[in-house]
Image 1 (spheres, helix red, strand yellow):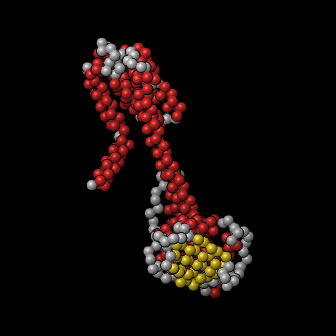
Image 2 (cartoon, rainbow, N blue to C red):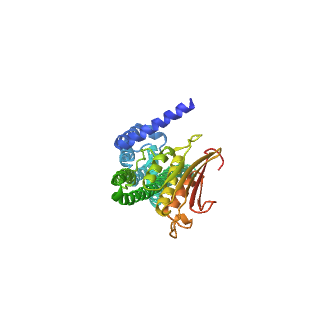
Image 3 (cartoon, rainbow, N blue to C red):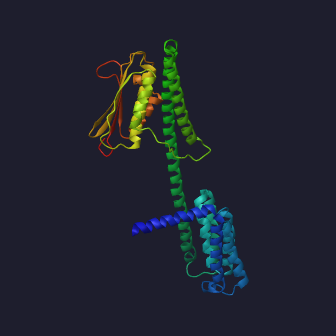
Length: 395
């Protein structure tokens, strides 16, 4: 029952906020008319119950009442100006001894000033609330002077504090949104690096192979050109999608296209083989469910490792891709037999700061995983080893 009530209240609140955003004038008009009606009812005679001088002319009371309520129609756009008008009406009410309760509506623009305006404006606006209280206490003393001033000032202080609290929470949510957007953009930048680096490396390998095959086996050259076209189109599709998300002039939309999973490792490896690198793959099915993010991490690390083999392992290199599943972790290993020269610094040396190595480390860290790289224990070549702990198990 409590859950249903909470859900209904959240739904009602969201609907009211949506209505207010779409039609602010309707809410402003309704609020102004409500308080104007309530204040005029009080001005018809009830104000005399709290007045220090009940002989104040009725026309003056109505005028001060309208001056305290009608400006609320502009409270959202000009809260400080609205408060100035209302404070003037409250000063007139205090000076004449009418002591209209409508003066407490000054809390509405005060709240908006605390919510939307700088602190200096809030302090200057709060100073407007003091003169009516002081004038009323001096002209029509009732008991000690602080009984006229302190309780009302405490009320206004609580209203201002409420506005500042709401503002602080709103700013915190906006900061969280900006941080999340920056994190998403950083992730997309890593995706772009992976796509561009891998696709261009495969295309280069296919182009080199096609050039050598053109003279002796023209059909192989045609196959290489077909593979180049396919790889290029896939890369362009992915880049257009990611660049669309990165546009600053629009609100970033969530990436809806399916991300690569472990099932996409076979097509990835097939593309690398077409580029001229022999790859032996051992890709058993996962014995337990893996989250899409973990699968994407494995895919990108394997992709980056194979791309580095294509770039730097040298002629005659071979690669092995192996997935193993322990009770508490998934281990992905990419080993090559490359003997080519290694530029320094470069991720294959373990001393570079390239985006590829940084991206792999960050991806592994997102899932409490570890990334190890270096020559394999048997010597010769290079090995990249990713370990992702099983979700829900100690890392």
